[in-house]
Image 1 (cartoon, rainbow, N blue to C red):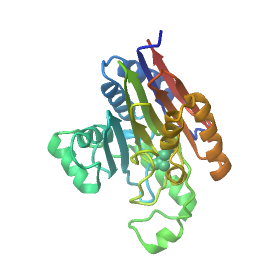
Image 2: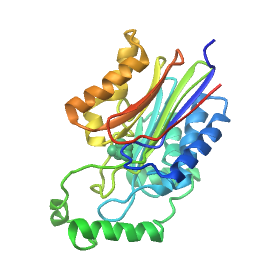
Image 3: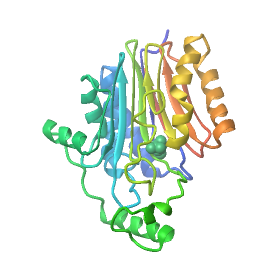
Image 4: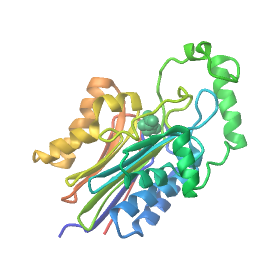
Length: 289
Ligand SMILES: NC(=O)C[C@H](N)C(=O)O
């Protein structure tokens, strides 16, 4: 008999060492998400829980950009509907805003207007960067630039080498009662270019679900959008390939083409589960019933 309920979470790939606190929080959030009866609620609540934990690069734990600010991207999909938000900076739970967008005609909203919509909806605001993170930002930026920039300038951008490196994005995929859902949320890449949008809110790249698979990706956004791994995985499974076999091939192919770049979690309508990475370590948790 196939398992009826599957929930898989990731806490990002790209970790040099996985922190104990992140392991604790992903387990706690897996438990929380698994308490819901629909695939959509399970992935959204698991991701919201990880955003709120502060232990990941999402929600209040998100990394800072070149100016020490944070901006968040997220995407969610369920039963043919997609919702995404990009570059929001005043909203604590990007995934809750993405879920709201999912039920509207646009597929994505972005920037200050998206934050304004979140405020109108009564979603909680993003708390300010805590003291510890502010200090870390100052240390990091001094190492790169030798000073703390006050505003964006071409001079500042000339220091930006476009070298993307990061970890701690969060995502979840679920199969519950034959329905598939996927959700991903991130603060992007540490010291990113202000205004940057990564792969996480791009359907087929950072998140994806249809009637054959649900998939969430993590890694280096600029590479993932070139590769569209979740879309590739769905196409392979639709042609009859096994999820695990196709997943392994896609993760390998992205490394062959782009170097260390990404990790994926996925579940199929048949109840197969895949996760794999070609970029350092990935944190994963799974619940099955
Ligand atoms: N750590 C991550 O997975 C970052 C995310 N994929 C981005 O590029 O925005």
